[in-house]
Image (cartoon, rainbow, N blue to C red; front, side):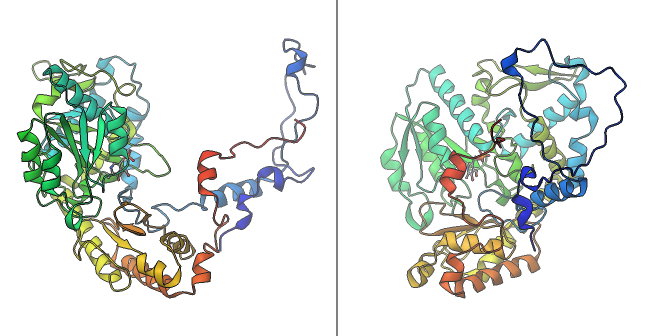
Length: 487
Ligand SMILES: Cc1ncc(COP(=O)(O)O)c(C=O)c1O
């Protein structure tokens, strides 16, 4: 049973005279007043600080820390987000003082160890993607998209080509068009395509010498591998355009196939997803990009280079670099966690992780498809998108209601209402470390919810400290400060 009082403020829990700390007598002379401060800066009343005993303070913060859901506490099938278990060993390694206490303003001579790790990370990401030029700079997938598009724009400028359009399918993540618009391109959205795949004829009809880039997620956001991706790439290359692979779904294909091998010219990784950087609620990320050799001279600076003759790692600027997109050399704390994950699993382990992720998603799909529609096939990659359309029609219970009710049963909700091409979408991504028991329990809970009385589900959640906040206002006008009355 969750402690509902955990949302009381310390000020509300305060009781006059109750306290925690007994200060020792001061061993310096008391000062009366602070003469240097102007009078209007001095408070006239005693500050109404909360008076609370230590156990209550401890309980307050411990209870607050359990109100949220996390990968460490709950099954978290948030599709497209790859909420993987974050190995604790890698957390410890990333906090080693050699890394955690380094400062980017230290001279290269003091950073050789860290730079060698980042250099190796560049190489591993090149190897996994099949694309040789890597920048570790971007701090998230979205910034990776933006950076790669700036890189492409610089490449076209360098060739004297005026290519203005970026294309993407309707199932694209919202960051794709947003990145394209920010990078100064005109956005062209294609339809959903047949059976969720890119429609080659529709794509062909849009291609001309204005085409700069086609952005496509593969496997796509419906959890399907774009079977015609090599043909898509050929069409783009025939008109002089580039193919951008949104690598948010790399967890499905590690060691199986590579964007560089199926025609991609650029891609981003979401290190915080595929390689276990803890994330969520806008937490830290890393979105390195990998590009073909002819795009590498335009990558952001710095990149890490190695002089074998001198056995020396340096920070270098590629010949025609677009400059810096982030401070220093990227979000090193997350890159290190990714590095340790890749090194721990090795090539074979990464491939097995993808195989298990795909197996788990297909198992879960098989457990839910008799009571939830799955409009795009009965096989998937590492995730799939179910639809609550029928449930809504028959009972009035929406996908959002189901998502809220799952909280009562101790499950984080799947991603809802994305991708937009599926009505009442529930996008489920179980990840490779989940057991069959967890997947069975989750599927059984979904089944139960779908047959519960509509009023019960529509009123959910019933067990959380806050029921249904106004989500727009909660995001746009968060109340983050407490003000003492009359202070
Ligand atoms: C398919 C896809 N592309 C891009 C992104 C953006 O990545 P980030 O959240 O790291 O900016 C996401 C994030 O959910 C995604 O799912």
